[in-house]
Image (cartoon, rainbow, N blue to C red; front, side):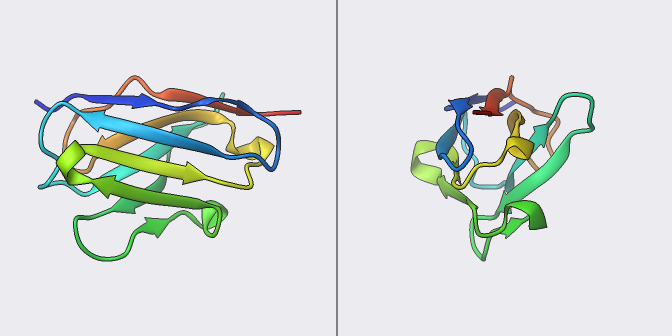
Length: 112
C-alpha cells in the first residue's frame, strides 16, 4: 500500500505563501490525487484534485490563490498556496482518491 508523506507547512503572515509537498512511496500514476485540510474543531474538507490528465479542480474559497500540481516521475504532489488568509489555517493532507491511505499531515498556520 502506498504511503504518503506531507511537508512544507509552517507559520506565515496573512498574504504570504507556502508550498506543500506530498511524496508517495510508490507510483501515483493510477490515482487522482487530492489535498484536504482540517481546521481545529471542523471536519476535514476537500481542497483540490488533480488527475493525470485534464484540469485541476478547487474548492471555491481557494480558487485563484492555490495551485495543485503533480510530478509522477518523482511520485510527488504539490500545493502552491498564495495570498494566504487566517481561515486557511489547518492541517493539510494529501490523499489518493479511492484509497484508504492518508499521510500524517502538515500544519499550516496563517497569523500575524
